[in-house]
Length: 130
Image 1 (cartoon, rainbow, N blue to C red):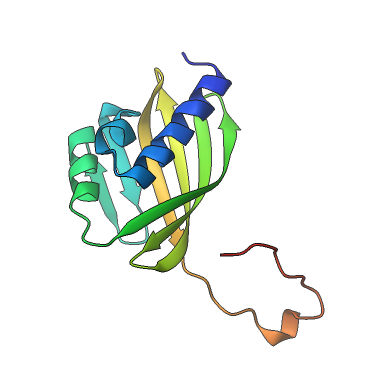
Image 2: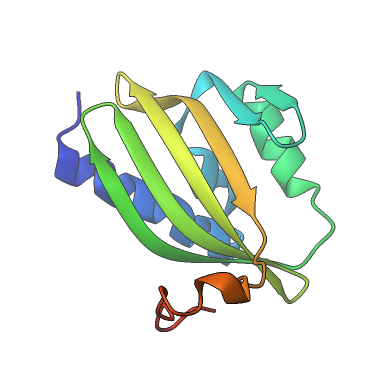
């Protein structure tokens, strides 16, 4: 079992490889029988090779900016900004590890939306929101 520092480093390497288009390194973190869930579209992808194939076939120009990684033990969360053809969306990835590899990942995607004026007196602007 990997220690937390090693796991954090491997997750950061995964996102760096995603940005660089290095699909082998990007998917090395997954167990051969890993599952990836996209609940918003109702899709589940089974197996590292299937996960890699569905990402490799994406037609958009994609960029990944890692915002933060939090976690410990076998459960880790990454917050990223993913840009598809110049349009950014926020993504949260929940990775569940077993024997040092991702056994199950769930990703959620959130597009920006305008803040309602009714909350203006209560809220402050988050700096560096891209």
